[in-house]
Image 1 (cartoon, helix red, strand yellow):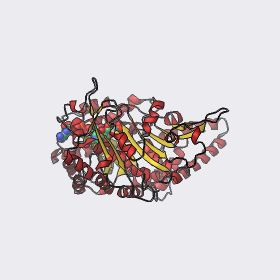
Image 2: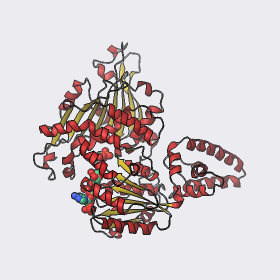
Image 3: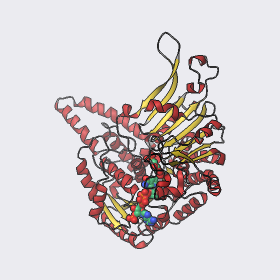
Image 4: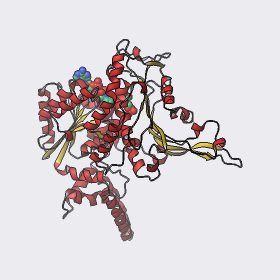
Length: 589
Ligand SMILES: NC(=O)C1=CN([C@@H]2O[C@H](COP(=O)(O)OP(=O)(O)OC[C@H]3O[C@@H](n4cnc5c(N)ncnc54)[C@H](OP(=O)(O)O)[C@@H]3O)[C@@H](O)[C@H]2O)C=CC1
Ligand SMILES: O=C1O[C@H](COP(=O)(O)O)[C@@H](O)[C@H](O)[C@H]1O
C-alpha cells in the first residue's frame, strides 16, 4: 500500500514525450486508479498497479484479454477525464515532484498532548495509506530530553491503523517508527535548531531538494521565538519550508496582528499555514459540494427561504487538564471566533470563481467583512458548576479561583448583505453539557397559505423544514420534511430524508488532521486561514470580548451534564428562533 505517490512519479518518469510533470503523470494516475475508489487527494498508485495486473494476466490466459483491455481503456479514459477536471489533483501534480525531493515533518512540542493525540497518528495514517513521499521522515523537537528510541516508544502507543484494510499494520508501524527521530532543545535559542537542521540534513542527503514542514504544537508564548529560530536556523536551503501554526492566533485584533507581524518577519505568507481543524472535517469540506453541486439547494440558500441558521458545538466533558490554557481564552475564543465562524463563512459565501484556495478565501473574507460586529446584548455566557461527583469548572485546580471565564456561550450574529440581511446566525458552544455533537441547522420559513395547517398539530414551528448537517459524531445530512402518514386518513407528520454516512459509505472517515497535513504536503491552502480572514474574524469579536472583560460580567451557572444555561433560550426567542437540537434529541437517543 505504501508510496503510491512515488510510484506515480516513477511511472510518469517513464512517460516519454510528455511536456510537463503534470502531463506525464496524468495517464499514470488514471491507469493506476482504475480499480480503486481513491479520493481526489489520494494520488495513486503502486498498489493499484499491482491489483490491475492479475486481472489482465488471468484474462490473457483464458483468451479474453482484448475485452478486459478495452474495458480498462474505457475506464482509463473516464478516469483521465476526471483527473483533468480535478483542480486539486492538477494543482498537486504541478507543485510537487517527489522523485527529486524529500519531506521532513518537524513537530515542535513533540512531547505534548496535541502531538501525541493528533499529529503523530495522522502522519502514520497518511504513511500507511501510501500518501507520503518515499523519502519522508518525522522529527520530534521539544525541551524534554529523549533519545530516538524513547521518542519512538512514546509515539508507538498513539499509532493506530485507521483505514479499512488493517493488514500488515504492525509491520507498517515498525517501518514508520524507523523514520522517526528526536532532537531535544529550547524554543527560544538557536542552538537546538541548528543541531536539528544538521540532523535533518543527514536524513535528507539522498535527494537534491529537501522540503521541510514545521508544526508549531507549542503554547502561544513560544510561537514567535520558535518560528524565528526554525525559519532562521532550520529552514530548507533547497526546497520549500512550510510552517503550520495552531490556534490561538492571538487573543484579539491587536495581539493577532502582532503575532502576524512577528511571523511575517521570518516567513512569507505562502509559507504560513494557519490551521483550523474544523475545516478538515469531512462534513465541512462537503459544505461547498452540497451547495454548489446540487441545483436544489442553491436557490433556497438566502433570506428568502431561510429563517435562521444555527451552528452548535456541544461537549460532554469539561476542561479537565486544560484549564490553565482554557481560562485565558474562554469558549468564545476557543471555539466560536474560529471553528464556528469559519463554518459560517463557508456556509454563507457566494460561489467562488474556482476551487482555487485564493478564490475560496476571497469569498469567505467577504462574508466575514459583511458581518455585524457582535453586540453585548447578543451574547449569553455560562460556566458549568459541579453536579454530584462531576466537578465544576472552578474545581479544576489549574483554573484561578473565582474565574469568570465562560465555558458556554450563545451568540446571535448577522450578515449585512443582499443574501442574508436579517437572518440570525445563532451560535451555541459549551463544555460539560449533556452530549457531544456538532451540527449546522438550517431552519426554513413557514409555508405561506399552508393548505395543511390544521393537519399538522398545534405547533406551526414544528412543521417548518429543517436541513441538518451533523458534523460529528454519526456524520449525517438530513432534511426534515412534512409527509402524509400512510393510510386512509389525512394526517401529516414530520419525517426525514436521511443520509447517514455510516450506512451509506461504510468507511471510517479520515481525521481532520490527516486531511490538513496532507494538504500542507501538497501546498493546498484551501482549508487554511488567510491573514485577512483571521483579522476580519477578530474584528467581529474584539469589542465584545473587551467589553465583557471590562465589565467583569458574570456567566450564568449551569450544572455539569445539562443543556446549558436558560439564557440561551431567551436569546434565541428574542430573535424568534427555537434551538433545533432540543426537538431532535429524543429521536437521536
Ligand atoms: N491539545 C489540544 O487538543 C489542542 C491544542 N491546540 C493548540 O496546540 C498547541 C499545543 O497544544 P498541547 O499539545 O495541548 O500543549 P501542551 O501544553 O501539551 O504543550 C506542548 C509542549 O510544549 C512544551 N511546553 C509546555 N509549556 C511550555 C511553556 N510554558 N514554555 C515552553 N514550552 C512549553 C512542552 O514540551 P517540552 O517541555 O518538552 O518542551 C509540551 O509538551 C497549543 O498552542 C494549543 O493551544 C489547539 C487545539 C487543540
Ligand atoms: O480546538 C478545539 O477543539 C476541541 C474540539 O475538537 P473536536 O474535533 O474534538 O470536536 C475542543 O475540545 C478544544 O477545547 C478546542 O481548543
